[in-house]
Length: 88
Image 1: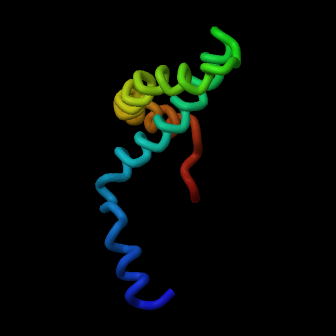
Image 2 (image 1 turned 60 degrees about the vertical axis):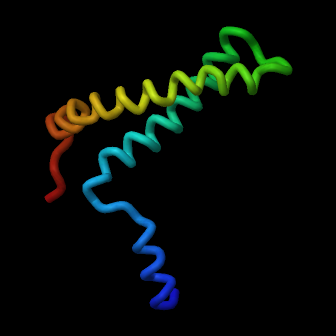
């Protein structure tokens, strides 16, 4: 990687302070989509309108999941600290 490419790569990245929010965004996005796929299939089956129903459910699930991950993350971090030995 050339120097200008390295500088450009560094520029588009967010600062370290954004880590909890970026983590919550990706975790919520992936988990909400997986849950919408499974729950929609389980409740209404997989038919011609399956993708539209999944996306409709995802519109509600993703922002909800994002807020929930932001709220639950500190609790989960404490639980992990209580149950896992720190690295030596």
